[in-house]
Length: 472
Image (cartoon, rainbow, N blue to C red; front, side):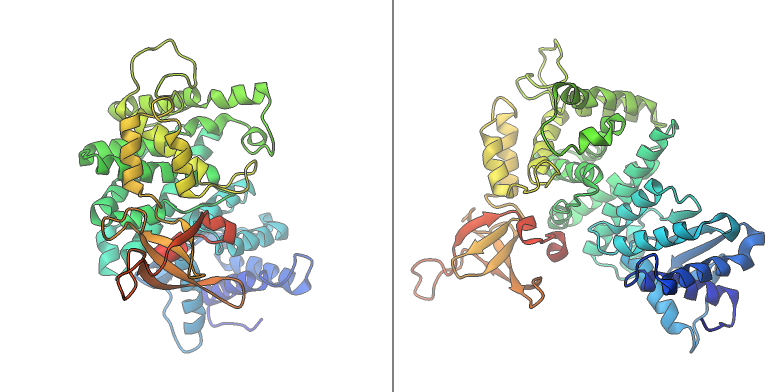
């Protein structure tokens, strides 16, 4: 490795080379091991300071709080690192600068996790979870609350701001779960702020929020499911005319509705097969466990009080035949009835270990309608179906023209089963590019019949498609 002018540039170079090399070499490769050793060596000049902080601010890199000035020899390196951090949706890292206490194997594990995160639907969420699971406590992910006004001034689109908010929602849940598992009392300020930002997006462009709710991540299901339930619940609440304050409370209930699953062993949550009676009894306890977790939160008493009921009720069913078993005969609360609907919808349209093929959104709605009046409030379920449309945003459609398309928006006219569709253009590598947006209600030139019609609906995962990639 060539010697650079400053320790800062040496550190940045070693970090970038490590991440680049791990993409093409296994841990036993000598070159990768040399890159790992070089990274450890680059920490040495900062050992006296105890830690080294790398951050992004206003499209500039800062090391130890000082801006790294670009010049002819480092500008490409700085640009590459900046692109890497921005693509992961994070503000930076804080490393312990004690190379003698960091094993080489952990350096390589960090590089693998960083590289893998780049290909995830929610990179920041994947990154923070895997670092915690690997117990790499010498590195800390830095992220800051979304400042939407600052983002607008920086030229970020609504979709970019939405994706960052989604990632921060995942991270806030992971932070709460990690603290609970360490017998600590987590706070809620970050989660509350994220929900407030989500409400802003709903007021600004609810199609963006609907696109965000199509994000699916098999490995991070528990977290993405909770965020999606929160998003869908707030969209639903907005559709039936709830106030902004009520939307925020509903969003918090959605975000925290599955906190009770934190205490359920992963071998039960992720069992590839039918649960036995003991295991299902454990699952049925999670709404009650969730109440106990909410009580433990470091939050204003009013917030905790208003977050207890709906998460407890979300599996009780409209006719009270669900779980946990209770002698109550009073109807479910409005928030409980809303969460029950969006929880099942997101679960049915998500792939799981025990159900690798998810249902297409329209099929899921059809199944849910069979539970109208028993599992679900019939009036609210009808509103929900009308809100999503016959083919919800993100549904993959096969057309009689031989084309494939993703439902992009609701119908532009009265034809509720003829939405706006983004055509998908096949690539030589088996992937797709987004094409033009077409209106399925468009008729032939002679006015007789429609130009395109739907032959089949599918869940996009059948074709390996992440809808949010094309919808945002």
